[in-house]
Amino acid sequence: MPHASEASFVELLTQQVRHEFTASQQYIAIAVWFDGHDLPRLATHFYLQSVEERNHAMMMVQYMLDRDWALTVPGVDEVRNEFDKPHEPIALALAQEKSVTRQIEAPFRAARSEGDVLGEQFMLWFLKEQVEEVAAMSTLLTIADRAGEDWFQIEDHLAREAVLDGGKDASAPAAAGGTL
Image 1 (cartoon, helix red, strand yellow):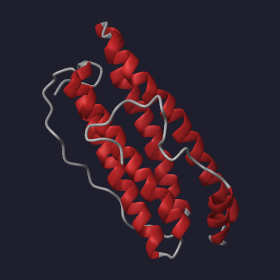
Image 2: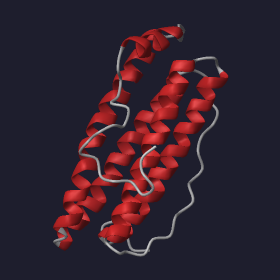
Image 3: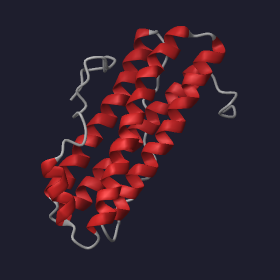
Image 4: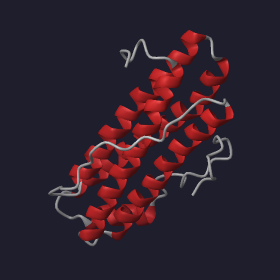
Protein backbone atom coordinates (compact mmCIF):
# COMPACT_ATOMS: atom_id res chain seq x y z
CA MET A 1 0.00 0.00 0.00
CA PRO A 2 1.34 3.49 -0.76
CA HIS A 3 2.69 5.74 1.96
CA ALA A 4 -0.10 7.78 3.59
CA SER A 5 0.96 10.93 1.74
CA GLU A 6 0.86 8.99 -1.55
CA ALA A 7 -2.40 7.17 -0.93
CA SER A 8 -5.45 8.29 -2.87
CA PHE A 9 -8.58 9.72 -1.32
CA VAL A 10 -10.43 6.44 -1.95
CA GLU A 11 -7.66 4.39 -0.29
CA LEU A 12 -7.51 6.70 2.71
CA LEU A 13 -11.28 6.76 3.10
CA THR A 14 -11.30 2.95 2.99
CA GLN A 15 -8.64 2.92 5.73
CA GLN A 16 -10.73 5.40 7.70
CA VAL A 17 -13.68 3.02 7.71
CA ARG A 18 -11.41 0.55 9.53
CA HIS A 19 -10.25 3.25 11.95
CA GLU A 20 -13.85 4.21 12.76
CA PHE A 21 -14.89 0.59 13.36
CA THR A 22 -11.81 0.08 15.55
CA ALA A 23 -12.68 3.23 17.53
CA SER A 24 -16.20 1.86 17.98
CA GLN A 25 -14.85 -1.44 19.27
CA GLN A 26 -12.43 0.34 21.62
CA TYR A 27 -15.30 2.35 23.07
CA ILE A 28 -17.23 -0.88 23.67
CA ALA A 29 -14.23 -2.25 25.57
CA ILE A 30 -14.07 0.93 27.65
CA ALA A 31 -17.82 0.84 28.31
CA VAL A 32 -17.63 -2.78 29.41
CA TRP A 33 -14.77 -1.92 31.79
CA PHE A 34 -16.85 0.89 33.34
CA ASP A 35 -19.89 -1.39 33.50
CA GLY A 36 -17.82 -4.01 35.28
CA HIS A 37 -16.77 -1.40 37.84
CA ASP A 38 -20.35 -0.30 38.55
CA LEU A 39 -19.99 3.10 36.90
CA PRO A 40 -23.19 3.12 34.82
CA ARG A 41 -23.08 6.69 33.52
CA LEU A 42 -19.54 6.28 32.24
CA ALA A 43 -20.52 2.93 30.73
CA THR A 44 -23.53 4.47 28.98
CA HIS A 45 -21.42 7.40 27.76
CA PHE A 46 -18.95 5.06 26.08
CA TYR A 47 -21.60 2.69 24.72
CA LEU A 48 -23.10 5.74 23.02
CA GLN A 49 -19.66 6.81 21.80
CA SER A 50 -19.27 3.36 20.27
CA VAL A 51 -22.52 3.73 18.34
CA GLU A 52 -21.45 7.17 17.15
CA GLU A 53 -18.15 5.82 15.78
CA ARG A 54 -19.99 2.95 14.10
CA ASN A 55 -22.32 5.49 12.51
CA HIS A 56 -19.32 7.45 11.23
CA ALA A 57 -17.97 4.30 9.56
CA MET A 58 -21.36 3.64 7.98
CA MET A 59 -21.56 7.24 6.72
CA MET A 60 -18.29 6.64 4.92
CA VAL A 61 -19.58 3.33 3.57
CA GLN A 62 -22.72 5.06 2.24
CA TYR A 63 -20.63 7.79 0.64
CA MET A 64 -18.48 5.21 -1.13
CA LEU A 65 -21.59 3.35 -2.29
CA ASP A 66 -23.06 6.63 -3.54
CA ARG A 67 -19.88 7.32 -5.51
CA ASP A 68 -19.98 3.77 -6.93
CA TRP A 69 -16.59 2.88 -5.44
CA ALA A 70 -15.67 -0.68 -4.56
CA LEU A 71 -15.47 -1.31 -0.84
CA THR A 72 -14.47 -4.29 1.24
CA VAL A 73 -15.73 -4.07 4.81
CA PRO A 74 -12.61 -4.26 6.99
CA GLY A 75 -11.97 -5.98 10.27
CA VAL A 76 -10.79 -4.03 13.29
CA ASP A 77 -7.49 -3.65 15.06
CA GLU A 78 -6.85 -4.95 18.58
CA VAL A 79 -8.34 -2.95 21.43
CA ARG A 80 -7.30 -2.47 25.03
CA ASN A 81 -9.55 -4.01 27.69
CA GLU A 82 -7.66 -3.66 30.97
CA PHE A 83 -7.34 -0.50 33.02
CA ASP A 84 -6.58 0.30 36.67
CA LYS A 85 -8.49 3.55 37.21
CA PRO A 86 -11.14 5.55 35.29
CA HIS A 87 -8.53 8.08 34.24
CA GLU A 88 -6.82 5.47 32.02
CA PRO A 89 -9.66 4.58 29.63
CA ILE A 90 -10.65 8.25 29.37
CA ALA A 91 -7.05 9.22 28.58
CA LEU A 92 -6.99 6.44 25.97
CA ALA A 93 -10.24 7.79 24.49
CA LEU A 94 -8.78 11.30 24.25
CA ALA A 95 -5.62 9.96 22.57
CA GLN A 96 -7.83 7.97 20.20
CA GLU A 97 -9.88 11.06 19.28
CA LYS A 98 -6.70 13.04 18.59
CA SER A 99 -5.43 10.17 16.43
CA VAL A 100 -8.74 9.97 14.55
CA THR A 101 -8.50 13.71 13.91
CA ARG A 102 -5.12 13.23 12.23
CA GLN A 103 -6.51 10.27 10.32
CA ILE A 104 -9.51 12.32 9.09
CA GLU A 105 -7.19 15.10 7.93
CA ALA A 106 -5.39 12.70 5.55
CA PRO A 107 -8.34 11.89 3.25
CA PHE A 108 -9.41 15.54 3.35
CA ARG A 109 -5.95 16.59 2.14
CA ALA A 110 -5.92 13.83 -0.49
CA ALA A 111 -9.33 14.92 -1.81
CA ARG A 112 -8.09 18.50 -1.98
CA SER A 113 -4.87 17.56 -3.77
CA GLU A 114 -6.82 15.40 -6.24
CA GLY A 115 -9.30 18.19 -6.94
CA ASP A 116 -12.15 16.01 -5.63
CA VAL A 117 -14.40 18.79 -4.35
CA LEU A 118 -17.16 16.33 -3.46
CA GLY A 119 -14.75 14.31 -1.33
CA GLU A 120 -13.38 17.46 0.29
CA GLN A 121 -16.89 18.66 1.13
CA PHE A 122 -17.80 15.25 2.57
CA MET A 123 -14.78 15.23 4.87
CA LEU A 124 -15.49 18.72 6.26
CA TRP A 125 -18.31 17.40 8.45
CA PHE A 126 -15.97 14.86 10.04
CA LEU A 127 -13.34 17.53 10.75
CA LYS A 128 -15.96 19.65 12.53
CA GLU A 129 -17.11 16.58 14.46
CA GLN A 130 -13.55 15.85 15.61
CA VAL A 131 -13.16 19.31 17.13
CA GLU A 132 -16.23 18.58 19.27
CA GLU A 133 -15.09 15.03 20.13
CA VAL A 134 -11.61 16.09 21.25
CA ALA A 135 -12.98 18.98 23.31
CA ALA A 136 -15.60 16.80 25.05
CA MET A 137 -13.12 14.02 25.84
CA SER A 138 -10.57 16.55 27.08
CA THR A 139 -13.17 17.96 29.48
CA LEU A 140 -14.08 14.49 30.70
CA LEU A 141 -10.40 13.72 31.33
CA THR A 142 -10.03 16.96 33.30
CA ILE A 143 -13.02 15.97 35.44
CA ALA A 144 -11.51 12.50 36.00
CA ASP A 145 -8.19 14.06 37.01
CA ARG A 146 -9.91 16.37 39.47
CA ALA A 147 -12.00 13.50 40.87
CA GLY A 148 -8.88 11.58 41.84
CA GLU A 149 -9.89 8.48 43.78
CA ASP A 150 -13.54 9.58 44.06
CA TRP A 151 -14.75 7.92 40.87
CA PHE A 152 -18.35 8.85 41.56
CA GLN A 153 -17.57 12.53 40.98
CA ILE A 154 -17.15 11.62 37.31
CA GLU A 155 -20.56 9.92 37.41
CA ASP A 156 -22.03 13.05 39.04
CA HIS A 157 -20.53 15.22 36.30
CA LEU A 158 -22.12 13.07 33.59
CA ALA A 159 -25.45 13.23 35.45
CA ARG A 160 -25.33 17.05 35.46
CA GLU A 161 -23.78 17.89 32.11
CA ALA A 162 -24.70 17.05 28.55
CA VAL A 163 -21.24 16.06 27.34
CA LEU A 164 -22.11 15.33 23.71
CA ASP A 165 -24.97 15.84 21.28
CA GLY A 166 -25.77 12.13 21.31
CA GLY A 167 -24.68 11.83 17.70
CA LYS A 168 -27.80 13.60 16.44
CA ASP A 169 -26.81 16.21 13.88
CA ALA A 170 -29.16 17.18 11.06
CA SER A 171 -26.17 18.12 8.88
CA ALA A 172 -24.57 14.66 9.25
CA PRO A 173 -24.07 12.56 6.14
CA ALA A 174 -26.42 9.61 5.58
CA ALA A 175 -25.26 6.27 6.99
CA ALA A 176 -25.61 2.98 5.14
CA GLY A 177 -28.55 1.19 6.73
CA GLY A 178 -29.40 4.31 8.76
CA THR A 179 -27.86 5.57 11.98
CA LEU A 180 -28.43 3.70 15.20
